[in-house]
Image (cartoon, helix red, strand yellow):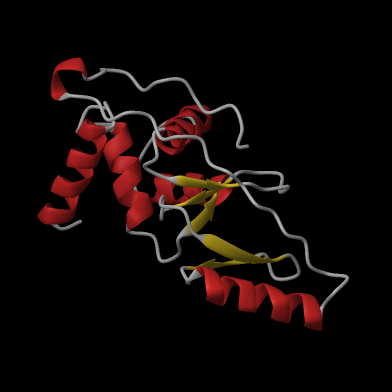
Amino acid sequence: MPHTVRAAIQQELRQAGLPGQGLPGRLLGLLRDAPTTHLGLAEILRMATEAGLTIAPAEIARQLETLAALGLLGRLPSTAVEPIFDTVPRPHSHLIYEETAETVDLDVSPETLLAILRQALAERPDQVDVLIRFRRDPPPARSSRSRRTAPGPACARNA
């Protein structure tokens, strides 16, 4: 990972109240380097093992939930067995194709999003579900003086 990317991740972690070094930074860097932006827990565990992170799966899952709760990762609302994490944490829309298990980012204007929805409903009226999630307010940024040394509580579930 280039030094500038590593420095940016460290800064994000510090702003969220986490230490800039250690497992959270290594995990976030690994996910940001991934070829796709939507990753299931099993895939993340495989990537972590391949990268030499010898951490228990439960600890990795806890770290992922903490990163998502702090707004450093997105977490897609899902009916899947495992959670799906999004390396693009800002609010944006998705198309999820169940038959191929593909998730596509839609970073489009509200007008374009409505046009896509109208077309999908016209073409597949009995196969489209719409979910609108209202996100919680993000946690306030922490100053470097009040920095925590351990990750905070895991996010229980998405709204």
